[in-house]
Amino acid sequence: MLWLYLLGLLTALTIVLRRVLRRQAPLNDELYSKRVAIEHVQSGVAWIRADGTFGSVNRSFAETLRCSPESLAGQEWYQMFPAAERPRVGEAYRQMLLGGVHSFDGPGRRMDGSPVWLNVKLVAAHDRKARFVGHHCLIEDKTRERELEQRILTMSGAPEAARRRAGSAVSG
Image 1: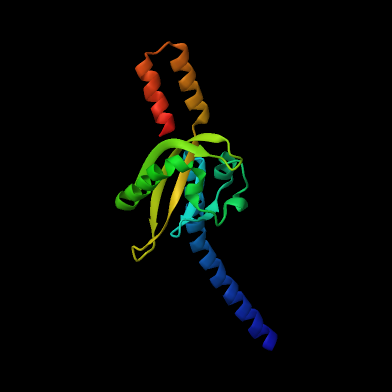
Image 2 (image 1 turned 180 degrees about the vertical axis):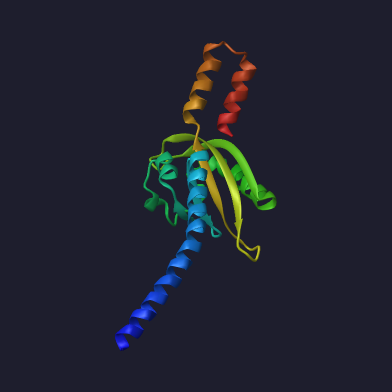
């Protein structure tokens, strides 16, 4: 008799669990599809904690900086920019805090020390109580496009002013 009671209880728990999982599946699918969509739109995505250190980094973000995602965990996010760029990055960060999102193009530095030209988007993140909990940093490697742009300017014999303008954009 006890085994029939246990079998009935197990059946009831199984039915309840299936119903809960069926309700949870669409939410999980939605979160997964949003994550995939973000990664297709913007290749490099990182979560930066409120203290300014990397929390999580996707593989594309790490590959852009020529390192592993694990090696970035706990490092300060602004270290991926040369020292001369950090005041401009700090201003972009302040703009993100004020407006919720801010984008900029600028030179970066890979972990091996080589230069990279980045398109960066900073997106503020808040918890349910509207407290700032960090931000998302989305990057896209624009080094190749930048090099081609510089070659075109050089090859086309563009006026010296255009070359200077391009040079000043590179230096910040």
